[in-house]
Each structure stands twice: as C-alpha cells, then as structure tokens.
Length: 393
Image (cartoon, rainbow, N blue to C red):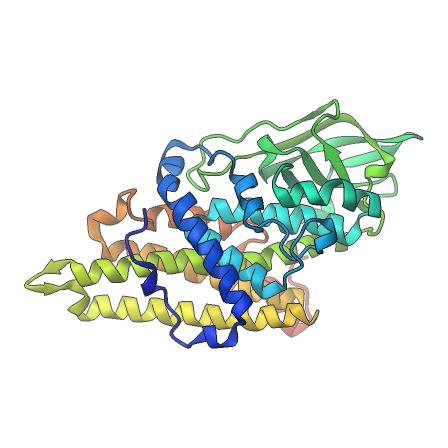
C-alpha cells in the first residue's frame, strides 16, 4: 500500500492550471483505480513474480487501452496529454502496469490504426481496447536490439499466405498475447509488419523467468517456426523502419510521462517518512542533507512535468520530432531512477521493505532505462539531431 495521502502529490509550478477539466477528471479516475485495484496487490505480485489477474480487462474498463484511438474502433478519441496523464498514474502504481497498457496502446493498437486495413481495424481494435484481446509487439531479437535494421526474422510469399520464420525476445505480454504485431523482412529485404494470431501453428511464446525487474509483468519470446500467416494479416500501409520506429516514438512518449508517476510515488513516500521519522530529537526532514535531497527531487519532477506537457502539446499539433521524444524519454527515466535510489536512502533500512515502493520502482526502472531505446542510444539520437553527424556507424 502507498505510504502517503494523495493530497501530497506535487504540482510545484501549478501545472494543473495548464490542464483542461477533462484532463484532470481523466487523471483522477485513473488515480482512484490505481489506489483501489493496483496498490493493494502490487507488492505481493512483485514479490511472487506473478502478474495481476484480469489486469488487461480492468485497464480496458477504465479506458486506459488505446485512449487516443478513434471511438469508432473502440478507443476514447482522447488527446496526447490525456494519454500521458494516464501513463503517469499507471506507473505510479508500477512500471509493469504502465508497460502492459503502453504495449497494448502504442505498439499494437497504434500500428493497426495507422497502417492497417479497415478490416484489420474493425477486427482487432475494439477487442484490444476492451482488454478482451491482449497484444504483443515483436521487434527486438536475440542478436539485434538497438540495430533493428539487421533483424533476421523474415517471411516468404507462398501464394495464398506468407511463411514466417524467426524469433523476438524481451517481449512484454508475450506469454499472454492473443495477437502479436511482428516486424520482419520480406523477400526483397524490406521491413513489413504482420499480425500473428495465437492460433497459428508454429507460433510459440516461451516465458522469460528469473527477472529482478518488472516482476509483476509477463515477459517472453515470440518464436516463429514456419508460421503460415494469411495475406490479409499484412499491415498494408507502411514499408521500412518507419513502421516500427513510429510505434516506438508513441511508446517512448508514454514512458516519458509514466516514469514521473514512479518518481512521484518515491518522492511523496520519502517526504512523509522524513516528516514523521525522528532522530536526534527532531524529524529527519529538518536536517540539511535530507532537505537537499527532497528539494532536488521536487525540482527534477517539476522539470520533467513541464517537459512532458510541452511535448504533449507538440504531439497534439503533430509537431513532435523523434529526437524531442528521445530527449524526454532519456531525461525523465534517469530522473526517476535517481529519485528511486536516493529516496530509498532517506528511509534507511525501511527503504528495502516491500510496504515501501522505492526498491520495486528502482528495479523496474532498470528495465525502463534500457527498453524502447537505451539511455546511451537516446543520447546519440539527440547528438545526431544537433550536429547532423551520425555517431552510430
């Protein structure tokens, strides 16, 4: 359970004045759901390495899956700031909760909506929005992570179907998924997306065990052994890396908001604890070193909030660049993981206990700082953008 009352959630620069009433209502409804549904269960789930039962359907009920997808396909038609606020509140509960919603929304529903046929949209999106159907996203491979252009997964045209072979790994929701949006190379070596359904023969999803991070989430592989994929399951409206990279841009944007929630959870817990914990005759919040930590936490959270708000405005206006999104993802994840680690120290030995969130968030953020583009790769994306020189090759 959370250690702090919700009244202490920080808004030091009065960012709420820049949000609409709809934004605040959406945020509050997700916050209430996290308090009632996630917080009572999350420590046990993380300790036992188990996911929360019926999570996707519950996320569907509160409109957290594909919230920006048009209403005609089961979404809520919300703007990008609303999506960000939803991700923030979900990750305040746990990165695994936000990851489940983020994968479903940005990596599965987004490409079907953007690049799919009308038939694909009608067939899959409403079921994904409700959580009745769980999706996964296949890009990273055992031998290729930061360099997706070198992927080995491939498919051949066999007349009435495609024959898919290859493997993907580090896939959130893989063991649970009903469908997977998989990126592979056609016979010409061009990258295209396929919707692979659970029932297809030769498609298996072995689970990844022994994780120290994202323990309340199922992770696994997607393995394709001569999988016959109907031709109508090819995403028809994109070819090349533009397809998967645009999905990653959407996911990275959601992450940049989400990790603020994890940082806020740690900050508010540390603040309350510091006010109540007495040593040497006064609350430890009265000591200079603790005040330094808390002041720096709030400063970094406030900077991240304002960064995300402007990025959300840019996305609403279709002006946000991939490099801008990379900057926000990199900065905000580093901010959150630093706060998780430092706030643990304020609690001393109690900081390692499950009833406090710091260690769980810190462990989760070790994954978040790596996936959807590593910390170093995002730095090089910014470097290339400002110098015009590619440092990757």
